[in-house]
Structures are given as C-alpha cells and as structure tokens.
Amino acid sequence: MALDAEIGLNSLGFPKPPQQTRVVVAMSGGVDSSVVAAKLAEEGYDVVGVTLQLYDHGAALAKKGACCAGLDIHDARRVAEEMGFPHYVLDYENIFKDAVIDEFADSYLAGATPVPCIRCNERVKFKDLLETARDLDADCMATGHYIQRKMGVNGPELHSAEDANRDQSYFLFSTTPEQLEFLRFPLGHLASKAETRALAAQYGLAVADKPDSQDICFVPNGDYASVIEKLRPGAAEPGDIVDVDGNVLGTHNGVIHYTIGQRRGLGIGGLADPLYVVKLDVDNRKVIVGPKELLSTRTIPVREINWLGDGALTDRESYEISVKVRSTRPPREAILRPISPTEAEVELLTPEEGVSPGQACVFYETGGTRILGGGWIWRG
Image (cartoon, rainbow, N blue to C red; front, side):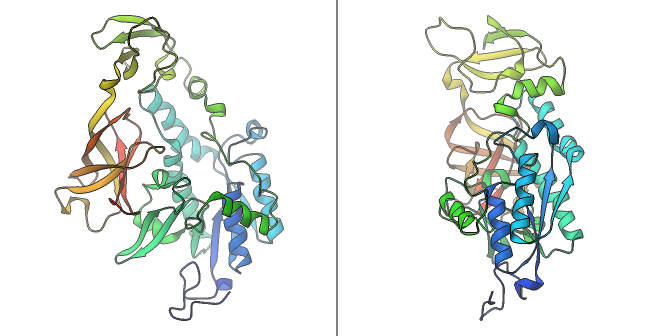
C-alpha cells in the first residue's frame, strides 16, 4: 500500500510502510473486529490477532449473541487462518471477574444500574490487553468499535462514529489521552453496518452474516437478577414496595429485580395512576414508587471524570456541552460545572427521566462530534 506522498504516513498514521508497522487487533470473534483484522492484513500490515477468554469457556460454548468465549474464539481463530496472520487466545477470566463482574454484582446490590461494558473497555481491553500489545512490540492496537479518532491541534481526539445508529462513544468515554495515542478504530468512518458486512463478504470471511452480539456477555438472556443471585447468594431477599410517604403497597422478592424508572412487573395493579420505581432503598429492602414526574432530574452529580477536552477540566467555571445519560438516548444540552479534576455537577437544560446512579454521563461538544469525556452518576 502506498504511503501518502505529502506527509509520508500510512493509513494508521505512522511514517513507515505497512509491512514495518505491527498492529495488534483485539478480536472478539464478531464481524466488526474480524473485518478490521482482515482489512489491515490485506493492506500489508504486520497483524497479530488477540482474543480474550473472559468467562467460562464450557458454559459459554452454546450461548449465541455474546462475545469472547467458545464459538467466538473459534471464529476469530478461523479468520486469522484465512487471512494468514498469527492469533493468540489469552485467559483473562480472573482479571475479568475481579475488574468487571464483581463490581457489577456489588453495584446492583447497592441499588445502582451499572454499565459493565464500559468497565471492561476501561479495565481490561484498554488496560491489560493494551499493555500486552505493547509487550508484543506493536505500534498500535486496533479494535472494531464504532468511534473515530481524529488528530486535533493538541493531539488525538475522540469523535462519534459516522453512523449514529452504531456509535459506541457512550461506552468509550473513559479512554484516556495516553490510551488514545495507541488506539486505532478503522470502522468509525463507515456510513453503516451494511458496509462492514460487505467488506467481510469481500474478504471471504465466514462471519460475514454472523448476528451482532446482544446483551451483556456474561448475562444470558438479559436476566441480571439470576446472575446476581449466583454471584451473591441471598441477595434476593424479600421486602416491601412503598410509596413516597412510606405506605406499603405490596411486596417484592428482591431489590435486585428492579431498576429506576421501571413501571411493569410491580404487582401493585388497581391504582388510578401508573406508578414507577423512583428509588431503591437497599439497606431497608424497600422499593419506593411514585408518579412519573418524580423521575425527572435536572441536576446530576458526576464523579470519576475522565476529561478529554483541551486544557484541564478546572480551567473554567462552566462549560456549555451536550450529555448522554443513557446509551440509547440522544445528547441533551447541559451546563458542566467542575468541582474538582474528577468531580462535577451537570445541569440539564431540559429535565431527563430515569437518571440512575451507576450509569455514565458522557460529555459531547455541542453541535459537534467530539467526545469531551464523561464520568459516573453517583447518587439519585
């Protein structure tokens, strides 16, 4: 592949031929990371594929719609064989349990709504795996995430994917500037997932028609409660469903079965107006319900902030930005007021419903595509 005649950089941004550029590709076994590996291999890069086994191989063998176990490891290995580059499987089960699964369980037991995919990127893929890539003398690590890395005045910046329907920026806000220097996202500029599948077919990959992964990889069928009960026996202790004045309206079989904003499955029918879960009192094993208007939130406390904007977060008293408080919701205009380098208060210009501790609050440039960082919502 020819170098850019003007600046002498290859497609991954290095001033040398692809053949002299080693790139570790994080391969989940899905179509996205497989296309990244195949594309770079075809362009002549020195590709090394690495797949992480994150949870029990045997239990996951027959589970469809997940990643990083069983059939997916086989699929990743097959792509490497087809494209002629080395492939390694690393056993990260203990690291994954300690860094992701245990916190997921503890957060749920504390009444929060965790997002383990963010922690997995932050603590496993972009930490331990990235260090492994460095140990392999790689120039960079590439993934199949739908997000863009663009060079700005002050270095690499994180930007939303071209395809808003595939954008994964909400799950990658905790990527640090140092990690961003080493990472590459070759799919972020594609207009649609159809383009990715077309590339997979072009490269003759058997995974071209493989379904996208669904749910959290270690939570079969989205049944969080059953996973928590296995991890923390006795977690599903019964208690009362009460209104905001403390009146008992019914009973429940464990706070872990409920999330903020939930309406269905409360088992307290016959009321004139619908009620929603507005708070979880874990210590007293109470699910507190109320009218929908109580779910509206304007002020959000955020901590563990990873700042990706120019300068320090505390350089200014406030920022006019847009934020996402759920991965499935569009950004909303807000004002960010720093308290410390890692804490801030976010004021939404329009109240948002169902803001829950444990979720991420991701910061975006208003009217643009740049991700300015984000943090964790820590109290309701």
